Image (cartoon, rainbow, N blue to C red; front, side, top):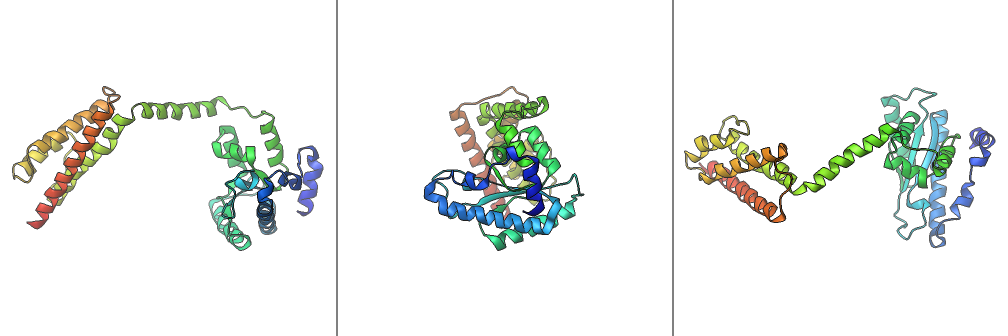
Length: 291
């Protein structure tokens, strides 16, 4: 692409693999369609660079268009990302919005299967590299630049050589959520009761109370409010206040770590109790509507 291409080749010739050679690695069965996609991506990149010039650092494609796999078809998208050079120009929210809108129009005009991600800045790209996010490493592992000013291909090479180890901060950022995910997985059944069933039962009561023009009470006081407002007027039976009280106690036990797991049978029982409770509150609401 003009002088930029010439400069890039002179700068790092040993890192630049010829894209046409790379394209020949694909499955011959899909070569014609794949070649068409890559050519469209090149046209798109050319149009974007023609309009935005030095603001564009690189344009990357990745995904099935570059992989030899049977899932590639005429409906497959060309995943595309434009990286803007915020080290040489100011890239504020307004400019990003304009470019995002613009490049989508260019993509639609060139080829309907070009799927353009919201633009990244060069700073954001390196932040993602340092943090080792799955998306950026997918790009480095299998992506290719249809336009580059001399930085993406060297980084891709460094990644392939194993020269990009994780920082201690990025490792901790991965370990912390991983630990939380495992905790939730181990305690999944208890957490279902903790979150979904508890709130479904509580909010169904609060809905009726609000309909009656009374301000809902705190969680702990809601069973008492049910007795004074609903049970005393024989709108619902006494057992439903106890049901709510039971789930509130369970909620507290999970929250404080007293209960960490329950059996599948216990979970099924809680689901049945919660379902009956919500249905009874819904009936009570309909009965109130008729009055």
